[in-house]
Length: 387
Image (cartoon, rainbow, N blue to C red; front, side, top):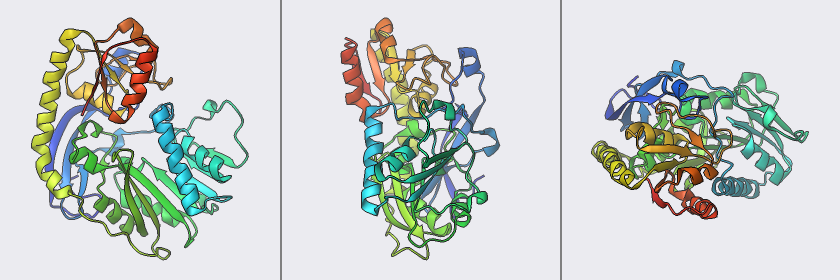
């Protein structure tokens, strides 16, 4: 699969190959043997100079089947839930989303759609095979509807003012067809807003956020390639911004007939970053393999964050013997085990028994929150950001 999934160009350039990574970073397992026995696959990161897109040319979509076992919710973090609430409030206020219908495609466990409906008194319809109704302790408000299935052409009765699709497109091998299918499934509406959010490839490649390279993500969008994808799908991008410390890329778009104008999209340094990335990524990997060996001479180390970044780091740096555990505040991960290495995932209060010498923070945006929790626990471990 070397042809570009966005523009179809066949002349794409290989940048980096990572072998034997877990197929799922965001599925946790009941015991370490099951976690270590999970299937692995390779990432062959390619760059398309024509549309500035990055993608995994070795991707095999048949290896991935999403369901309720998929657990990647970040909303247990005060830092992340604050970001999500601010984003929802901004969309509601800036676009006058009050008393309207909203569709959230890939809604996960439903947290963001709840915010949009709460803040604007809106009617919401969320679609995601991983949705779990049993998590809802209280009955849902009558204007909020969740469907544990993929969105498809059978939803033509919906009339949304906003279509939200956050952290989904990077999982889809045919992203243009996926977006165009959403547009075609809904009746035309010149006023409809599409909000699409994906991991920012420039953060991964330019800023060397290499721990975001995971098998679930076959696409890595730059601003230019996300705009190109939307335009090919029949959308007119109106606004592209970096969010959450430049880790996310957000696009607001309308149908081509309703768009006032297309946002102008610069290269953003994608080509230069792609040229430098292969050597820089290898150096970053080698640095952390050496650094982890050095750090653990002082005592046990733990990784804070059992999501994509933490699982990728543990598997890439050979951390099986050097890391005592991964820590996560999501209770649905605690007591389970990480794919590949088989590390146990523990709650923060388990650190009192481990008494780590160093806590490796996988996402710098959470450092303050983590330091506060360590202080509450009376722990004085060194806190070190992994960059």
